Amino acid sequence: MVFIIKIGSNVLSTAEGDFDISFLASIAEDIKTLQKNGTKFLIVSSGAIMAGKKILNIQKDSILSRQILASVGQSRLMSLYDSIFSNYNLTISQILITSDVFTNQNMFSNAQRTIEGLLEYNIIPIINENDAIATEELIFGDNDFLSVYVSYISKATKLIIFSTAGGLYTKDGKTLITKIEDFDEAFKQVNPTKSTFGSGGMLSKLQASMMASKLGVEVFITSKNQRLIDIYNDKALGTKVPASKNPKIKPKDIVKLAQYPKGIIYVDEGAKKAVSNRKALLAIGIKGYDGIFKKGDIVSIVDEQNVMVGKGKIQYDSKELKNIIGKKNKEVIKTDDIYVI
Image (cartoon, rainbow, N blue to C red; front, top):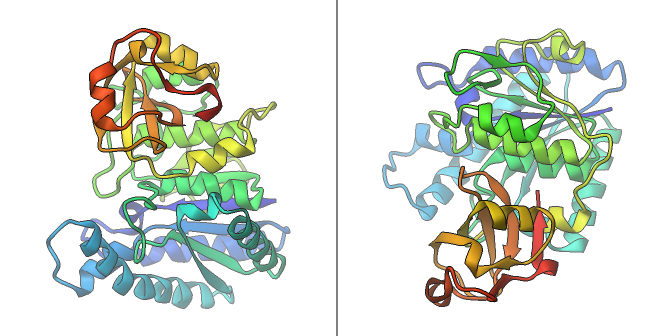
């Protein structure tokens, strides 16, 4: 079995803003125990920018400032993992990924072969987006989705997402949803609140979980107060998202869904149904858009509840699209260029 552990910046941090050493130590201790059962582990970890902020006093929020902070902080982040995991005789490695890994077959094959080799030797890859060289075109934007793409590369069995919330909750924030069995119903119930420090939130985690499920990967969203060994033995508190028995996402869709969108297209219910059934997106079903993009760019397709339906290759630039929204018989994204979650 291959398990992916996703750890965000907010989970890595204590209430005082320091790295949570005890949490990482508990992860390492349980991995050491579970490796004896033949289970392999990969960790998708944020934290480079947070680590950089501890060293550099850069207040400006821009792509360049994030690149600088990540470049300085990544080595400190890896040093932290190495010092803790080596204490349990565990060997780690570092893999930095950008979305072009998924659009270039040679890069994808190389990444997959490297990961398989590391796991064969019980080495734990620590994977992060390569923020130090990422440009706007290459940023994943959320490691919830990066963890899904890594699950796909590594042919993982289970994805464990640690979150500050400890699972998915209903909109009143009071009731933990222990199991997701109907995604349409879940999107109506789940609180859309974002996390304090990370770019993700409950809605992001639900969307990522749905994608993972349709890839045949089970997901468990939980709190860092829950031990990894209890999660393994199905004794932890959190939200379980079972793997689909009939995985529906096609490999070509994963490649396209991993690409960073240049804009967002907001669609009505009729257009959402058409896109979900892999039919062309027409201008008459578009409610609006955000971003600046050109013909041939990848854009996100979002419904009226701000839920991402999929992505697609657009046939118009943003200026042209503005003039045709709501018009009949204008094909904005062709059937073959739609990639559905």
